[in-house]
Length: 194
Image (cartoon, rainbow, N blue to C red; front, top):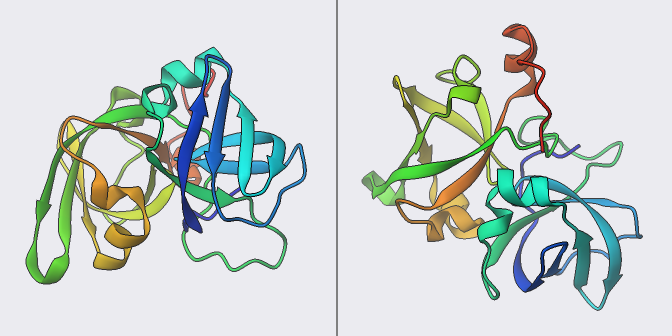
């Protein structure tokens, strides 16, 4: 489980059909540890000198934006929560509900940006104004919901400390609905998540 507060940016060093290798300055995790990469909970299979190797299945690659990653691209990295850690965001499981396109990322007043993302059918009813949503693993508050989109106001700190400030319209981001919204809505259709 994660908080949606990104600890560092990592860089994709290698990607194959079954593995992802990321360079990230985090405390060396043991094999078997969970790390969130762009909001996807992945299991560490090797970690040495800030290089972390993960097994990634074909379903995860097809359902998330991990399949679109390029060598050298930045990713959001968050180690799993430990008992006693501060929860600054919201509970994020790392189980991506959908990947969706950015419709707009526009400057706003005082260094803020407005992020508009398409609202996939799988998340309709689970994303609400003033509610939480994880976008590429970042815990964010929804400012507006339309029939086929939702919006978030990004503060300068988030733009600087995560990959969201580098994103462009047309790119896909990973989305995970808030678990409280899911239970309040009565669960999901039962389809397997990535």
